[in-house]
Length: 196
Image (cartoon, rainbow, N blue to C red; front, side):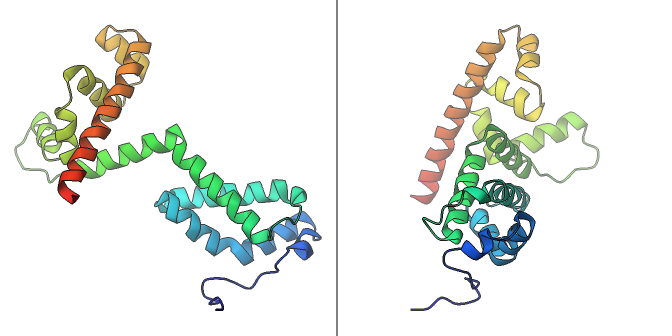
């Protein structure tokens, strides 16, 4: 069974001819041959266009840096795929990425229509109450809820939260981590009920 050219561009099986080029020409050839399919692969992991672009760029920088180490034990294509998969997984594991995804989810779930005559406080309360995610946050014990709200909604640092609540920063971080875990459990249970 052959591969469709729409999904798999023609490529050299061993990549040795590309490796013999000067690095600038080689990376240009590699990006022309594999750029779109690598970008699609990365998107299946990160599921966000901006992050896909960032990770794709990181992949091709890494390929450029490590091109001289390619030993030909696999096809050039599979070597690039392994770099792309590892970079995608690294991105998903990164603290910044997890934090960004949570903020995006909170932001998306907190969209609301403004009602004329409402005070800013009333708008915020209604905005928070209208969100399923925020309802779950509100269901957390106070010691976790306050830290999650201050950290994600008010965007205070753990140091600032410590000062505001008269707590040690290490205690704030511990509660933040435990609050995240409890929230994750609540959301998993809710999804299980809704989808199970």
